[in-house]
Image (cartoon, rainbow over all chains, first blue to last red; front, side):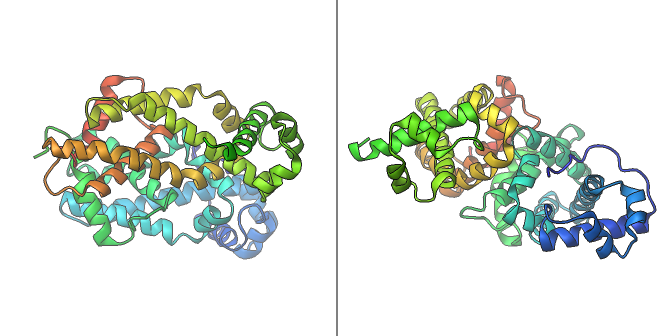
Length: 203
Length: 193
């Protein structure tokens, strides 16, 4: 089964049921992978009647779609919050990069997919789908950059940061460990930040 | 190429031709025997992992060709920035026009993409090794910021160039002016003086 693309708006549901279902889906995927996770597994994990869950989600496909939308929103909010808590541009970018790398590293469901079912996740983050992913992720984290950059540059900078994190996550060859703050800071300060500021602000 | 490499090369070229015709899933070892004229026994001797190994190495083989063509297209660029600009434009066009890649991406992305990801480390090494002398030349000409670690900088550029070739995102790689901004700001802003 392919992952549906997380584009459409999530319908507004009772938060408790939806949160439980999303949490249960993530727990099942982290344990058995996406292909083997059934709608019944999720219902059992969530402690919901299958019929109740079915009324909300109408099947595994929709359940997975909602889970992706919710997780993407949660990750983006976490990365923005990391940036918002800092007062200089450098500290904000370092915090955002480190937070994103740690969220990916600590995401058990995603780590299972990368390790054992890459065929289900790679089609959503590479080539043409990669364009949509990077542009979307960039716009989602851009608000944390508005204090430091002209409005015209924030989406562009957000996209570059998303690209930097994604490429290190997908090709961990001689990896620079971006979950390590010192390593992330060295990369950001030397190579990433001057590129984001642009020629007019470069020193 | 040495004589010893020849059957191996023939088998990989034949597998590539079969994948172009039938796709990755439907290509069989028998198809490759017919296409290459190399015996089934020899194919298994060369690729003990059978079809899985053959497909993986064929993906790596074509990726090597792709990046060798890219290197050939840009090697005489006058400076580092122009080299990257020409490389990005050429690679983007080559990917758009790569009929076999487009077809397999369309029909069997689940089979192809994990193999591309596995083989990617070779490509990263290749791009890094190719680019490093050009950056060293920039440094000798006094055009690199003081204190830049050339190897770390080259790996950063190689990684992001590879990412941009597959998914340019917001950047229109057919627009020379945009590519120039991308290379001189995002990619090289921290590297060139």
